[in-house]
Length: 267
Figure 1 (cartoon, rainbow, N blue to C red):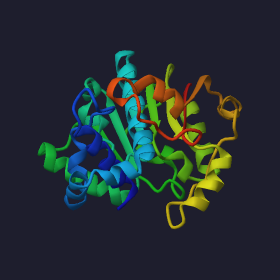
Figure 2 (tube, rainbow, N blue to C red):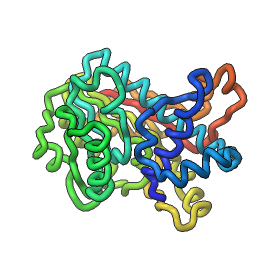
Figure 3 (cartoon, rainbow, N blue to C red):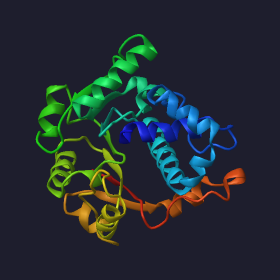
Figure 4 (cartoon, helix red, strand yellow):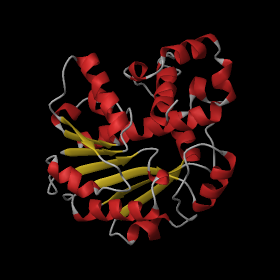
């Protein structure tokens, strides 16, 4: 199972819960999962329980980013760029984004599969969604975006969900530099990241999995983003998201702590 499908499975599983129990809601995620895997999860919920902290971390991340997108739309967002989009469905389910140009940037193979699925669901392409195929480590995001109509003068939100730690430090720096130099006033970037100490440890504990390539040193977020010219830099962790979202029936659910961190910064 690929990473994009794995995350879609988690979103679909969470979305199947009642409204007062689920943390995030993505009614489209179920279209991107393996039906056989879904049957197994439904018949054996204890499998999800075995990885509960990981699942909780993912659904917290989804909810957090959904909230930021919704807030950005209300504040006059003009473009949304999703880097490493995978099976992200925000362009198709968040109110207001139909009036925003959304660029979904991803590797050609999963993107081709996704576009086929979107056509099956909606019977057509969405006019405001632009697909940008790119190999993040051998091609320049800037060239690909501009060829697809990206406007550097517009207020833009860049999302990097489950993405930044899989690309090289050089690719991270190039991406962040591009954002600062090529987006309008009030633009922002939001992403989740690992500590640099967690990159090495994570690779040890995940033999055979996608290799982590990038992390930020502990207490080094402001210095790191500041060097590119970002301002209003805010950091948070899954512990903070626990306080935000896990109430009522979810009070006893816990995401991983001291592993996944979040950053949002303004251009």
